[in-house]
Length: 260
Length: 261
Image (cartoon, rainbow over the protein chains, first blue to last red):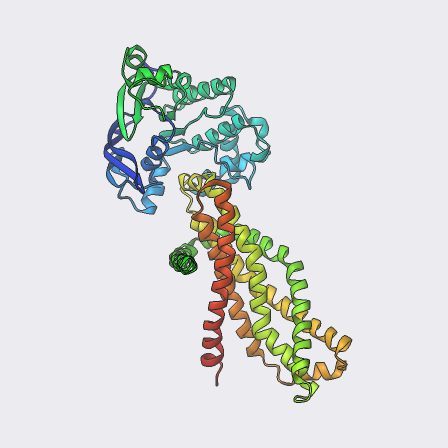
């Protein structure tokens, strides 16, 4: 994915400073700093329960931080009101871990909903754009099915279609390959690559799947116990000889990252 | 001590729910400006709440009316002429039994179903997904259920009133040796439209209470399948308790203050 030149949208990207969040006595993020440039494909690594999903939800204002600042293209997210948050989210798509498709409506309606609610477009055009988004993820044939009829991989793809249909500048992926078999995972990874390339979006992929990380990521950040313990390019991560990132890539229980 | 602690924690929970309910109510009122965009959702919810509840309300009401007649007749014996039987059944049904029992049974059914549906949407991140599509969950999920329940409860109550009065009629003729003419004359004698209106105002408020208890418990669900079950249960408890408390307040306001002249 590195060396991609088609991504050239304006904006400062996402700048995070001193971000802290705890739930009760459980400190999840302990003052992290992170800069995600426009056009970048950033992978956020970390073991389960290390606050990766929380980080995504903080960026889009689904959760409020205890301290710190988050700026998306220069807009401070942490102090936005509801209406402004809705405005901001129009430029951000999110692919949730379990897909989070609305199970009361068909796959096509799931994809179309964002367009229906956000834009005043004629119905034909809404359906056409929703069909295009489904075609991009290879799901043209299942538009009329209900989410419960889809496999895990198809749900993720439908969720991807729903995220891209409004043509966002950013796409956030919460564990896009978790729970999928290796072949389906590979298909999802290729799809993320393709969307990055064709739509020129900035993406943040939260994962603990290293195969996926190396396929889709330009730069890595490793979260552990509320701190970022490694940050660098995919190359730097691959070539690291020691330290937490090496341990994480090797998947070893022995090392600086505690195994419990 | 344990019992006291349990009662205390339940009271705290109910007060918390009432506070959350008040906030949600305010946000629902705020979202009414977008009501035209939600008409389809409201109609859908009206169908779910109204249509599905008819058999339940039918059965409940027949027996409510029959029991009211039997109990009244027992207390009348030797003191009050039976020509007042229809009067007492109609008044107690229209003012109190129709609205309250309908709200309690529909509240159990609809409150639990709203809490379970929205709770499942919460734990599977569907509500977050709505937020990400810049759709306000209050406008999209809470408001249509609130409006639909507030409309359908009075409608179901009218149905319940009619069925319960007929239930009383059947019991009067079948087991109480009261003639059809006696029952119907009694019914008409002191029948006042304002009693019906008072009952329907109650039903309107109860509808809102049912939707709000279902919605807040659904929205605040956490912890997977177990959490969804707990949310459904809390919704039913909260709506039942709140309906009875509101019934007392409304009875005072409507029949002591508004209609006292």
